[in-house]
Amino acid sequence: MPANYPTLPSVLSKMQRFSRCRKACCTSPEDFENWRKEAAETLRNCLGLQWMEECIPEGTILERVDTGEMIREHLLIQTESDVQMSAYLLIPYSAGKNTPVFLCPHGHNGYGKETVAGLRTRPEYREKTEKYHYDYGYRLARLGYVVLCPDCRGQGERREEEASVGALSCDCTRLAHMGLGLGISAAGMMVWDLMQAVTYLRRRGEWNGERILGCGFSGGGMQMLYLMALDPRMHAAMLSGYFYGFTDALVRLNDNCSCNYVPGVMRYFDMCDIAAMACPRRLVIQSGTRDHLAGESGLRNVTGQVEETRAAYAMMGAGSRVKTDFQEGDHSFYPQRLPELAAWLAE
Image 1: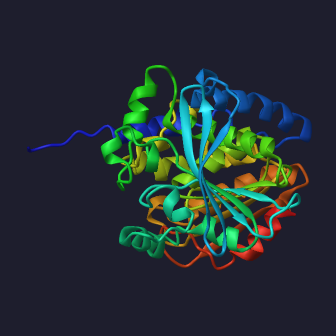
Image 2: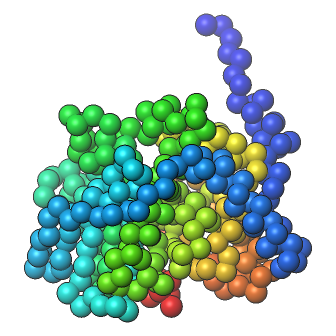
């Protein structure tokens, strides 16, 4: 073909003119609180949470295994009346009433909960764990925290077709197509399930329900970003490999997984605004210095977002509650400072 007439320049122009119309208000504490209330409602509607059906998140223990290091439960948790979430619950031998709990959703390319929970029973699990340091849930359990590692919708044991369960690829595009016409995003389905997981952990009552923490890498970081913005029961969280400006990371790089695209959200917010909704709860933003998913501006696309989130926190007297952990490398979870950062989040 002799010519090419793409649409991207037009969309980038619209992003400049029309995006982020409800960015975080940093004029006064009172104005910030008014903004947060309205922003949270807007975000819920973008995700489609108003269409999710509440139920009591009962849990069924399918298997309970003593691994020699900890107890591992294989669970099914009811998240809607007709939806179940599979998960591993890692329980250190030392766990008791005061033990904090980490909720550790996974991203893509890691076989769901299996790698996050530290299972190395198959060569492909070992390969992805070594490539991305995907076993952060297991590492946290070895540090003494109770850890819930769920399968998100469309991955692991929650694939749409039984024959594809355990496959590496995901069904996020199918989920997005299913829900789009109803105004329900794939991300919204995943975040709803995490909210129900928080309810389950608090109802179970065996550990510290006031210290439910989050840690997610890549797509798990995406889920945790929205969860921290909308669920005040979350005490603190670490977002790894998912904190960039939308324009470079999701518009210019527009072939990312469908779960990243929430209808209308870029009209109202950038990632820094969504993170600001979590103020004053503690956040750790982790990134590889060469994470290709940050887009053409690289680490600057991360640091710029962090600075804006920190400005909102600082206006509320909590600027020190946003920490960064930048490590040399590409898209990966980085466990080097995990003991220190987990302890800080749990304070």
